[in-house]
Length: 417
Image (tube, rainbow, N blue to C red; front, side, top):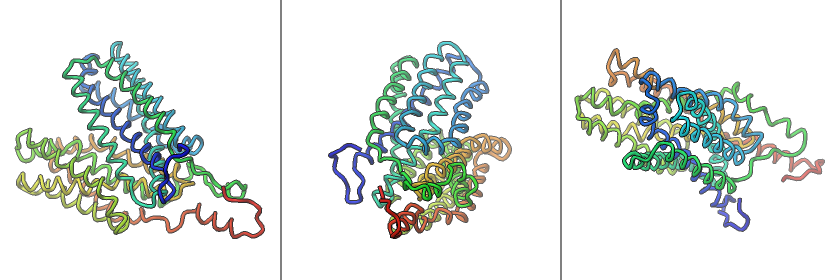
């Protein structure tokens, strides 16, 4: 944090909050910038759709390797240093893709692996910091950070579209994005809140479990399963809603795009205004209502029998899908001392939905049609409703309990730092 900057009544300097917004926006901007140039990279490499799919898989592999290990990395380095290092790795990967696209498949695969690896750990670290800011503010804000990620993707996609229209080469566009991301993110993280440190006594340090221990915590695994269900719901809408509307209702392509736009707009609005509902009514009731809204909306899309009803369903689906992923991250980070390991586990489980979802819906869509295949997400939403209670806030974090025990121990000569 910057000395001399104003501080909120809850002890969090506004600079830290805006720094988290910045890194979320930057993350979305970089990923959308790359996505906007995939067709040109494919044409340059002259690969088939199947070949392109295998190339793109390297980024997913990088993320899947990084996320389970990210808890240890964040615990050791802290969120600020982790985000800065991973942003540089991601930028290096993007630059490698930019240059490598002129030379062949191998450098592009290497670059995408680095991009995925950097993004996976960056994602966990910025969520841990976001949860720390949220706890310091004393009000729910994580979903708004995720809404800012969506804003970054919109900016990246629009600028990428402009670059394509102006026929700017992939090399210059992606190199510029890589440099911009590296500079902006490494500057922004200087305003992060400091990493949570356990008390200095050896007895208290022993209570800080190893980050990998979170993999055997029932609550953490259940939160991860909840996030997976909600992420699958969100990803299914993003990937398949437009196609399902066009194929299932014989709608014009523009109307399919409109249904998708309604879904995205509703989800973005839900992420911006939903935190107030959580603060008013509580985390678990709002999450259950959200999953129920998504379930009703999805069923209206699948079984509505008319396009207007399906579009109303798309709006309810988007609203319902908005809070699941970010609020699950907040729940995983309830105890600051164990936040890194737990967020790493929840993110690792949750992101499996984004990897497995598209091929699963596509496989079923070949057999029963894309519209009917969406019912898989409905089944997962039922599970989400049933296990949403796992996201209930911890009544009292171990940090608070340890501090109170420590300060009331008259025989202790230590002090809280």
